[in-house]
Length: 112
Image (cartoon, rainbow, N blue to C red; front, side, top):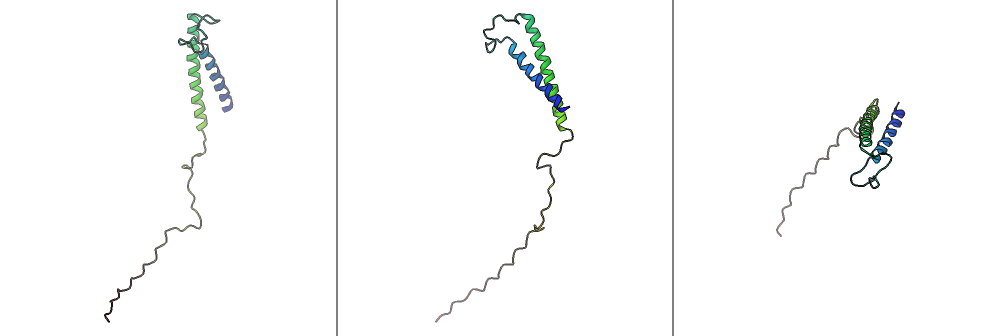
C-alpha cells in the first residue's frame, strides 16, 4: 500500500510540474516568448488552471495519506523515547567525603 501510494504521489508531482511549466507566464520565464503554441487562448488557460488546482489537491491528499501511513505502528525513533536502563556497577548514591582533619592548635613561639 505504501509503495503504491508513493508511486502515485510521484506521478502526481511530475504531472503538476509539467502542467505548471505549460502555463503561459507573464514575466517571460519558461513561456518562451509567450506567443502562440499548441495551447493558446483563454480556453487552454482555463483548462491548465483547473488541472493545476486538481493536481495540487491530489498532491496534498497523497502527502497527508503518506504522513498518516508513516505514523501507524511506529517504533520509537528518538533517543528521548527510549527508557533509560540502569547501569550495572555504578554506585547508587554518591560516596560520602572523608572527614576533614582537625587542624593542630597554633604553636606559641617561645622567648629565649
